[in-house]
Length: 443
Image (cartoon, rainbow, N blue to C red):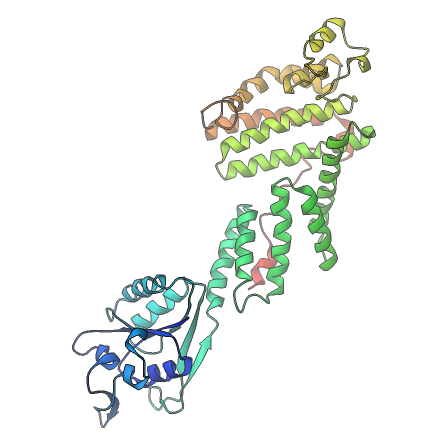
């Protein structure tokens, strides 16, 4: 259904021209209702419309409803304050809410400047709405001549598109990729915006970082590879693509370690997963999701021990003591007690680091110095709402946890020549982008 919202001033001709041209199913008139108002031209009795002759108005025509042959079921009239644009704005929005899902056309040719401003403002709030104005030759500064006037449609979605684009920029500056993607997707469904190739290109790239932020590395890499084939990637984008390739490889190695053998050099690449987790935790903290952030810090600390042990060919989910001949007897007995009903020895984060210490690994030496502090801060996670407790984590608690975990892992990285050589570590790892320069000229 096509619904026309139109402002009415002293002249009926532009209004009649608009209605006859558009042929709407319903018309909502916005007019003033005082004695000198425009309400009378809408549905007043007798000859209520006319032109000025020698400075005096001569009425020769019936009201607008009669001239356009509208029936009562098609007509709605809103009396508004002549000089209050917000009154027109509010009433127009409420009227449109009465017809959800319908197509709206707003003609703001007639009426006061405030009425026109109110209708125009309301149009920017609704996506299924277009703007028109009756345009024709003027023989003075006041009136449009009716006999040669026509309805001109404006691309109202340009305004809505700019508003959505600014919102998308704000979301991307906060690295909220999922929300930004939805906004960009909605923009591209707007008439007049859907053919914007630059915007579509940016949306495609944002989907990469959206999947990346969800740890869906494989999907992100697949989209990134297609993107690089379609468009010319800059140097920064190539670096992100290389990081994604490392992440996918590290995840595959982590999952399939028992089925395949990997070189020590390739296993070292796995630590890139820890860097990504830590950056992800920082993004969650920026959103004030401190429970989520600390959960990621805990997982990063746990995974660091797991990859350090993989380099010793030890899998924490199934520790084989027979492959650790240098382990002291009393320590072997300790780990033997961890064997479950399925016959597997499975160890958690603390035991993982303790085992590295037992094996004389550099990470174990750092753990000995940091052990007390790490266990202390990670108790926050254990008693948090997302783990085993009911206590939401506060900002200062997250910051204490981050400081300890980042410092501990950075110290471990510094002692590992293989990681430095491969440029793996927090000092080499860049966070995901929070700006897209091409977005400036996308609309």
